[in-house]
Length: 125
Image (tube, rainbow, N blue to C red):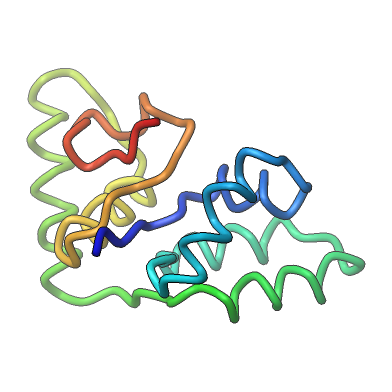
C-alpha cells in the first residue's frame, strides 16, 4: 500500500475545505496511509488561529505522525548539500520533510513542487 506524507500546503487546503485536498486525504485516512512530518505539525499549529484549534486537532489525530531521527536528519543534510552544490538552496524544513518521507518510503503530496527537486518522491496527479 502506498503511504503518503501530506505537506503543509495540502493540509491547509484540507482545513480550508478545498475539495481536491479532501478527495486526496479522506481515502488515505480510510486506508491508514496518511502521514505528517512532525515539522508539518509544527507549521500547522504555528499558523493556526485559536478558533481553528478543534478542527486542526481532529486533522492531526486522523493522520499518523512521523518523528525525526538521527537517520532522517543525516539524510536531510546530505540532500541539502547535494542540491546546494547545484546552486539550489532548500529550506531546512523541506529537507527534513523530504528525508522523513524518503526514510519511511512515503510519497509526498504537495503543490510546492519547487521545494522538492527529487520528483521521484512526489505524489503527482
